Length: 276
Length: 240
Image (cartoon, rainbow over all chains, first blue to last red; front, side, top):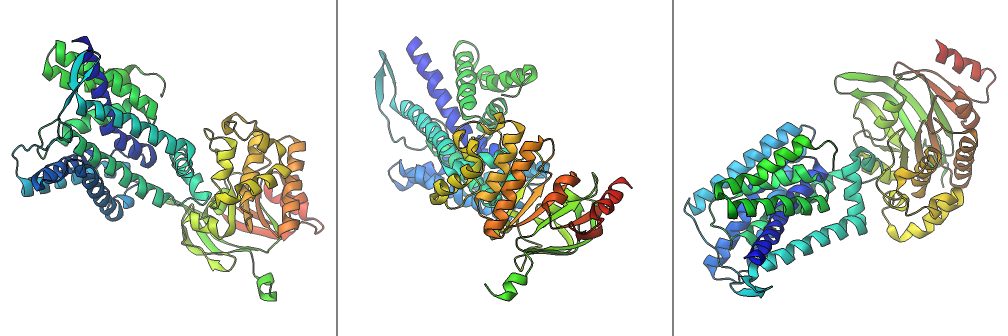
């Protein structure tokens, strides 16, 4: 029982980390909260539904989701967002509007009914004497791989240094010859691609419907607010807040559990006196 | 190099108007800087000196007039394109990336990283401390060392024009002398044109060939620093 709950805590943290990673990257570099993040999650989830419907290998959903997410983000950044960066409030409205449009388009095409996608891994494994979902363990591993990969790129490559420079002082980065418009474009595409990828990874765990992204968006948003633009802080926030969610759901009330992250994030933000 | 190329200004500004949203700061500024020339822009606080540099760099929009760099009209260009044309900018404040290392700050300026080792050696010849502290976080450098990093980063790309905003501010005299030596040496070696924005009249007049005095966003006087009475003339504008 204890082992299972411990695994639930860490794998839930892994899932939350994957879901919030794209939002954090976009927030860090572009200084905007992408409220269409949930829509990109839904796009990725429906990529899983489509590959299941076509009888394709479930792993292909990941690639399909990422490509569609990036393509949609490229279009949105090019035609809408780049004109709004100087007006942060308008970017929030625009991305929320995009969220509504995408959800309605999905509804028009797929309908409102709940759908399911096939899992790439349906087996269970024995971990510490407990039988546990191998798929959730793979998600945890993927979260670690994604976290390490993003950390290595930001800390050890020129692209990462450029991205960090834009985060710290965009005007100065421009003056050093950095094409910050291109950096913003690529960052938004990457963030949206990661969101869609997260959506495809989630599909075997959840029921798929057009509005599935909203609760995930809220939780990811709270985690990013608590974490700031630090990958390590995001992992810690996902572990602590996600763990609390699992424990409250298990020992208390599942409805209260679904609110745990929001409540804890508000409490942390209220009492935090220094920026992490 | 043809005679025409030699005569062409490294940087020319004509009838430039610019400023911030809702506020025009520059009123028809006209000046030109030749290759291998050091040009000082002098004036009291709030007269538009920094705004002029930022507008030349494309960081602020030019509402009217032209900015030409090496013969190209860059008035509507994005800053990164102007930089890649051969212009380096040394801003006045908050102009190093504090959380990046010294080496990362330098690497940011280069597009061709294969040249970094060679360029770093050049920087180390000017300022040996920057190479030895390559892995140190730039924010932990002293004020003087940070100015060395700024100048080193600006010269690392071998620019044709460098715009320097108040580099002498708050520095000890020995450091000011060292920065002056480096700029003069680079000008001699590469034909670099330097635009200095300064409040330190001694520093500016000792270094520059020509000057312009900016007052309420307009050029009220230009001249050669070697001319008799140049200092008195400049100081009269700065007092009044």
